[in-house]
Image (cartoon, rainbow, N blue to C red; front, side, top):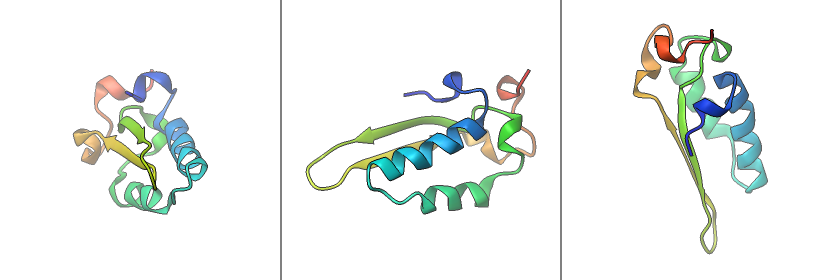
Length: 84
C-alpha cells in the first residue's frame, strides 16, 4: 500500500513501521539501520521517502517489504514531497 499520502511526514511512518515489525515478530533494527545510512534530511521535513510497505503472511515466517523512494538520496526532499 502506498504510505506517503496517509501520513503527515516520514517521521510518522518511521514510528509506525518498527511497531508493525515488532507486532509480526520481526526485528526492526535492519530497517532503522537502513534509514541511518541513507537519510540526508530530517524525517519531519517531508513525506515520500517511504513509498510503500507490504506484509506477506506465509507458513512459518511473515515477510515485510518496505520500498523507499529513488529520490531519497537528494540533499533535500523533492518539492512534491515537502511539507506545506
